[in-house]
Amino acid sequence: QVQLVESGGGLVQAGGSLTLSCAASGSIFRINDMGWYRQAPGKQRELVARITSGGSTYYADSAKGRCTISRDNAKKMVTLQMNSLKPEDTAVYYCYGEISTFLTLSTDYWGQGTQVTVSS
Image (tube, rainbow, N blue to C red; front, side, top):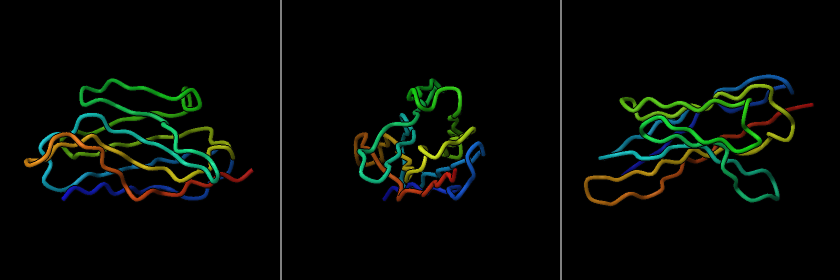
């Protein structure tokens, strides 16, 4: 059983910052990419940022220059630092990981989501 648990969401004023964290646990053999998606009301889920096991990063245009993704492979954690937040960043943020266990090949696992609300 693999679990991803997010923390760090909340309410912040426009221009503020938030840090989201996600910890993976369970019978994990290997974690490849980890990252963050978000889904705003009435919109499709979209990628915010991802990071490979080697530390290479990718950011959506909306996140470039404002967000920093990092990971701690030993702790099986991924973190998203978000600065200069805007009301349009309001969404549920989901952590994901491409994880293989001792019994299964690489599969996408998702956290339960954490709400980020940016007030104007």
